[in-house]
Amino acid sequence: MNITIAVNPPGAGYIKISTIVPENLPWTGVYFDGVPVTLTAIPNPGYTFVNWDDNIFIDDETAISFTGDFTDNTTATANFTGAAVSNAIVVSEINFNSDSTKNSGDWIELYNTTGSDISLSNYIFSNKEFYNKDFYGDPSASGSWFPGCVLGSPGTAFANCGENPIIDEINYKSSALEDAGDWFELDNWGAVDFDLNGWSVKDENGNQFIFPSGTIIPAVDILRYIRM
Image (cartoon, rainbow, N blue to C red; front, side, top):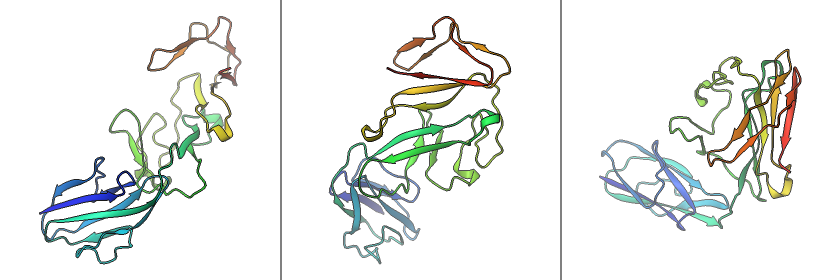
């Protein structure tokens, strides 16, 4: 049988069906009769879930998530109210791979630029590698993290990667309401001064900054570079 999912108005949100979240809606999938299927409405920033369209397979049409026993072809449409908000959530601060002597854990700070609450249920963190991603879940649960250089802390004991110096803090593209500028911080956790002569930082577009000759990070100290 076919189950079609849709949202109203278009672009107001997504629907998670069982374990997947189709990017393009309406979307139709083939499911077995008698196998329970869970649907969850996910509003985009600025929108709020209202209800599901009338459907004989939905007992409570005001429930944002439900499990139904679908026995025939059907369409489940989630209705939302509100208006789209651009750049509603920004990454305002991030910390990872801290030096073992100054370990404050691995964390990320999200800033809500709107005047309304935004639910992060079913949001996903990921990088350019498709297999490195994390749903926004319980940060104390080891299953919520993927192993990295620090062995996926929390959930696994911290271990230093051994590289020196390390980038221990970075800030960029701040909210216009709380703009702290663009900068990054290097931490020399070693017992001797570190000479950055010949070192550089470069982004994926080829933009490069070469540290001037004589740039030294003192032993067990930090060096912060700020874009002027």
